[in-house]
Structures are given as C-alpha cells and as structure tokens.
Amino acid sequence: MQTLYAKLQHVHVERVISWFEWTLFAIALAAYVYFIAMSVVQVVLRQELLVSIQEAETHVSELEAVYFERSGEISRDIAQQYDLVALAPIAYVEVAPEGERLTRRDE
Image 1 (cartoon, rainbow, N blue to C red):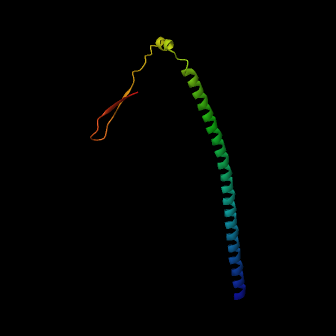
Image 2: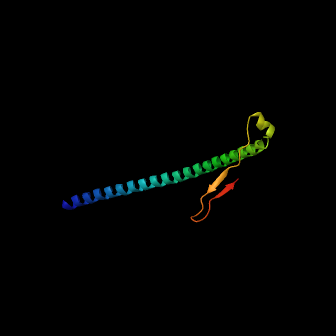
C-alpha cells in the first residue's frame, strides 16, 4: 500500500516538474521572440531616423543656398530703399596680463 502511495506521489512530483519545465521553456521562447522582434523594430526605426536626418540636412543645404543667392542681391540702392544703414566697425578690448598695456583691436 505504501509503495503505491509512493509511486503516485512520485508521478505527481514528476508532473509538477514537467509542468514547470514546459512553463519555463514557454517563457524563455516568448522572451526570445519578444527581444528578436524588438531588435527588428529598433533597426527599422533607426533606418527611418537616418532618412529623416538626411532629409533635414538636404533642406538645410537648400536653405543655405537660397540664403547665399539672395544675400548677393542686396545692393546699396536696395538698402537705402529700406532705410538700412551700414554699421560702424566693432571694437574689442582685450585685457592684457598684469604688467602689460591694454590694447584695442578694430574689426
């Protein structure tokens, strides 16, 4: 009688261990699939980001080209028409180390 009970208990323990192993395997498989999918998603998002960056750089280059093109169109006549005046040269003062004189630099 005791041997039958021990066998049944042994079978029950084996079922629990088997169930635990299969559950652990399913969790590991689900985690593997999740991380592979996330890696693929991150690669796709990175590619889209690189395309967006390239488009932004192209747009900035186009804006710079337009700026340089239009900045050459301003003449003295156009500036006077809009009441623009030339700026006086800017003077910078540098502090010399102790014992030396101050200097003035005009640009």
